Length: 127
Image 1 (cartoon, rainbow, N blue to C red):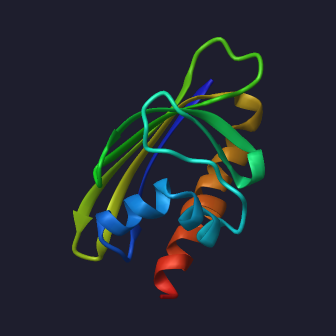
Image 2 (image 1 turned 90 degrees about the horizontal axis):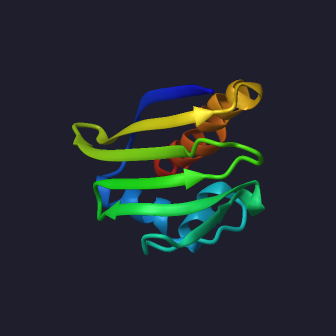
């Protein structure tokens, strides 16, 4: 199991980034894929047409999202924490993803950089 931590900067205020990460229609706009999402703790979610599924653990509006991502056969929970901060260029996001299975670690790091935050950056930069 490996952990991944990285900071991303997006050209939009934290309030807009939070909405883009928590409203299904907004998620579909930047990801191009179906999403099921709620800001209710303990609710299930699905991203990228079901490629990523899990449970929403905690929300602090415009500031923090904590989720458990499901990996088949995994004993320890894989937790994703995104903390949103105001930044002179818009929003800084501190991402921490714990307990990523070794065999998919590189794929997930690439996914965070390109599919997730790469697409979000393009979405906001192209407005």
